[in-house]
Length: 106
Image (tube, rainbow, N blue to C red; front, side, top):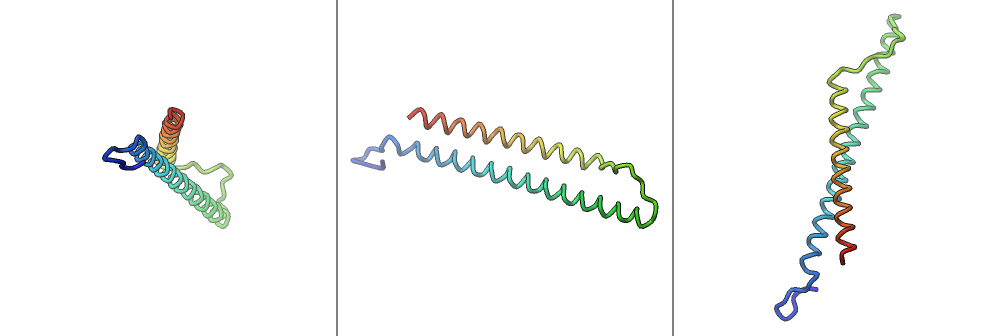
């Protein structure tokens, strides 16, 4: 509990570590949220492009009923994004376990 008679209290150093871990957890959660929102934005943009393409095909009477394939780069980008989100979720889970371990060890 602070400095008393020149001695640091037993809880002085642990609070900083818990604060740091909480900050890391919040930061990782924020980054995961941002990555997910970017993925959602890309998904919506892709849907809008497909709708636009379909309407153009229908107007030109050259409409094909087969679904349009996405470019390979788009598929790979989504896989990379999914992998990053998965890694972040694992890191968040690790930090949560560490915080729970610290809480139960007191």
